[in-house]
Amino acid sequence: MQALDTHDVFNQVDELTGINLLQSDVALQEALQRQQAQVFTPALDRFAQQLGQKANWEHAELANRHTPELQRFDARGRVQDSVEFHPSWHSLMALYREQGLISLPFERSDKGRWSAWAAGFYLHGQVEQGTLCPATMTTAAIPLLQKEPQLWSQLQAQLYSHEYDARDVPLSQKKSIWIGMGMTEKQGGSDVRANTTVARPIHDGGRGGEYLLRGHKWFFSAPMCDAHLVVARMAAPNGELGGHACFFVPRWRPDGSKNPVRIQRLKDKVGNRSNSSSEVELQDAWGILMGEEGRGIPTIIEMASYTRLNCVLGSAAIFRTAVVQSIAYARQRSAFGKILSDQPLMRCVLADLALESEASMQLGMHLAQAYEREAEGDLLARAWKRIMTPAAKFWICKRSVEITGEAMEVFGGNGYVQESIVSRLFREAPVNSIWEGSGNVMCLDVLRAMGREPEATRLLLQDLINMAAGEPTLTRLAQSLAQRLSAEPDALEPQARRLVQDLALLAQACLLRQHAPAYMATGFIHTRLGEQSGAMVVGAFNPAAIDLSAILQRALPA
Image (cartoon, rainbow, N blue to C red):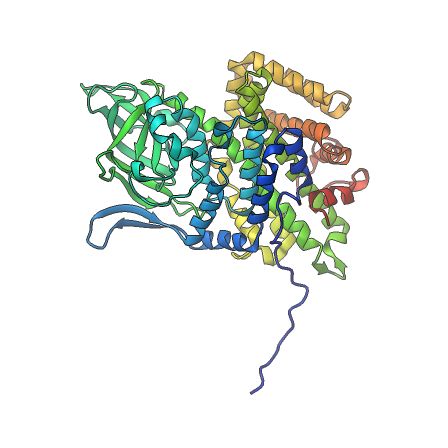
């Protein structure tokens, strides 16, 4: 019997794969050149070529569809507390580890190392985000562990290793290791000072001493990491509780037994599905005190200063993929008798997405450079790092939900199915706003940093005023910000979101004006800060003063 062909498939466009993610990104190439990262560019180019291959987009889809599974016991009832991952997860983890990006900012001394690390993280995040969670925490743990000589001597080689080792075995047997974090408890959330987990000394205690930790962690990131940095309250021998401290808690004890960090369940998250987040009970888990007693929160906050930069870069990576996929799709898909990318309203939407994407990348890369320069004693760089990192995390991560929603609309129904790349971006988008401090926490941290470091605030605002010189809209905003920020602290808190939003927008506009073609800066200022800035949705502006063609060509060369 002859098959019935009901239709031919036409005017359907596959999502873009098989692309060199660096060679197609003119703005990122310029940033690496400007920030003196040329020595790292060949390796990044090879990584970008490999990442963009179709097989890795398929790995990303599979790792998020076949989510991690908790194995609490083995076949005979012995406690196992392990998490099984799809092979695609391990493939992507190995790919990232092999680039040496985990330790690059600390292992190398070349100029541009932080920029190269940021670019590598940004490139990987364009394909898959969940694998970057353990990578983020491991990199951020390195500067903390370097301050603990005994621990560092034991772990340095494994942290600097470029070889992926997925085995669940004691630290002494591992070729490379991953480090996680254990801060959040259900009664406190971002308020770490509300934590009730208790640490009791085994012997004399003190820095580098052994402790047993008992408590419950509501979000325990990546439980299969080889060790976690955990915040707990100190307990004196008489039972009296002291301040919080930070502890190094491995999965295995030194005697070769499994450390009793009992995984209660894996979180069923909206996005970030490839990565495991867990709820655990610490049942007298063995740990080593890091830093001084009672200084655990400042210790872990230092780690968070690095992971917040990762959130900025991760969201910028989401923007980049959303823009590239949207432009590539619109250039091939037709509707109402015309190619989508030729239709005036769609061109406004695509150009607006492209402006958002580059502005986010420029700010993220500038911050990465500030981390490098701050380590060399640059006071202005310290101001950017301390004040602008939480500001950028607030604004860029907050924007990701709207941007990915717009990208999904470009695809229409094809974007609103699980197999779609942009639907995964949309599910992924909220996590960076929530992880390492939600929006309000970031805004309050900006105000706190400004209050504690008035000289840094002055340096930052003066730098922005200098960059804004000659552009009336930016100059007015910079001067307005300086005036508004001089108010009393009680008056600042209710308007913190608007202040931080304006600070981030000003920084992005200034950086575009300084480093991008004039049509990019003009477009950004016109749509975000000029007369058109009252628009509430992407693409809702008068395009008469904007070079849409140039913006789209820069975002993705045809």
